[in-house]
Amino acid sequence: MTASLKDKHILVAVCGSIAAFKACELVRALRKEGADVTVAMTRSATQFVGPATFAAFTTHPVLLEQFPADPSAGVPHVDVAEMFDAIVVAPATADMLGKAAHAIANDLISTLLNIVECPVLFVPAMNFRMWRNPATRDAVTRLRGWGRRVLDPDKGTLATLHEGMGRFPEIPAIMAEVRELLDRPQLLRGKRVLVTAGPTREPIDPVRFISNRSSGKMGYALAAAARDFGAEVTLISGPVQLEPVPGCALVSIETAEDLAAALEREIKGQDLLLMAAAVADFQAAAPAREKIRRTSRPPTLKLKPVPDLLKTLRKKFKGTVVAFSLQAGGDLETARDKLRDKGAEFIVVNFYDEPGAGFEGDTNHVWLLSSSGQEVEFPQDTKAAIARRILEFVAPHMD
Ligand SMILES: Cc1cc2nc3c(=O)[nH]c(=O)nc-3n(C[C@H](O)[C@H](O)[C@H](O)COP(=O)(O)O)c2cc1C
Image 1 (tube, rainbow, N blue to C red):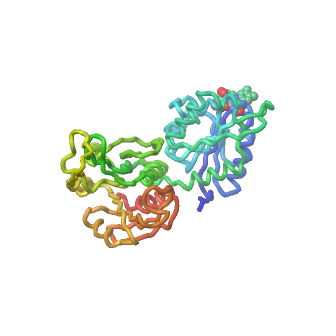
Image 2: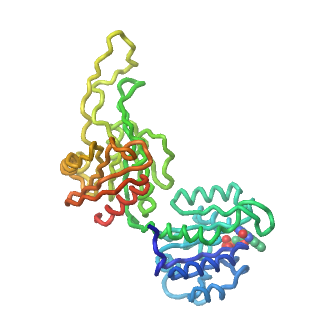
Image 3: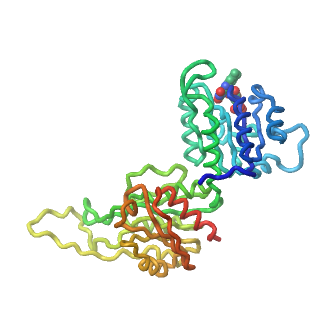
């Protein structure tokens, strides 16, 4: 399901690219879908298209100056920054991408980009050499890392008749991105979210360990979704084969003991804990100091239970806790007991014996149970989609 643009307040920030005239078409397309559009222009942009064109298309005055000749009361750019559901920087110049990536705020648009908390989409258009310039690449990587959406420009014949990547993307592609952007309501804006992900490893000796099949994919998807919903995210991760989630602080751990210490350090000031890590239930009672040698009689491995991290944490953590439970055969009863036992507000249940769910894969099928008795099923979908649905359900129940 994609978001409707009806009555959404969208700022189209036009920069000084030869493609500035194409922003007129974008503004019209947004308006046709019911969006309330305001245009801001850089001084360079006005060299390419007159503000009167955009004023006519939008029926709003065009925002041009950070320091207008007749200053009004207050700090207008701060007020403006709070007015919009989304900002589309189109065309985005190499100059504006660089400024946004480096906290440079020396005109109205770059200042707004430094302040806004709403979703931002950059639609670059530039000479192909400008696009592949390492400084531009670096700016794009930084912005994407912070959860800003930066479209790739199209490949084709550029204004200079050069062939290359740099063309302003087609309007339908931009519109699809804008819808996608607005489909990410900032449900967790201003919230701090702590996510644990992946397995733990419990040593048997210096070279061997007990672990489990957790890939960390569900926890990483939750971290990315929480970031996209506007949260400040810390991800505590066991050993996994995944790239760090851009825009989330990463704390790497190995054992359940490391995890307990990391949780102890990181939990302060958090609003939501998503405990997706597959923490070992048992550890070696006495890990050997040296590698256990092969002998004709295999050694006996004595295990002891790992302390219950969540139960311990619950006593001091006042925020919302989402526990995770891996069951078999569609068993929800055990998870209901676990929810009560842990004192969590929610528990996500998935099943290791179900194809396309549980560990390792890219999809999942879960039940979300709440301490107030709600039980909802999220049918099989990508872990990214399931993560969003979990957060959409949980966010309104947070203080
Ligand atoms: C004719 C002409 C076309 C330009 N086209 C682009 C462009 O497509 N993309 C871009 O990044 N810069 C382009 N530039 C350079 C920008 O206009 C210049 O970097 C300007 O300082 C950008 O200012 P702004 O980011 O405040 O709009 C062009 C310059 C000229 C003179």
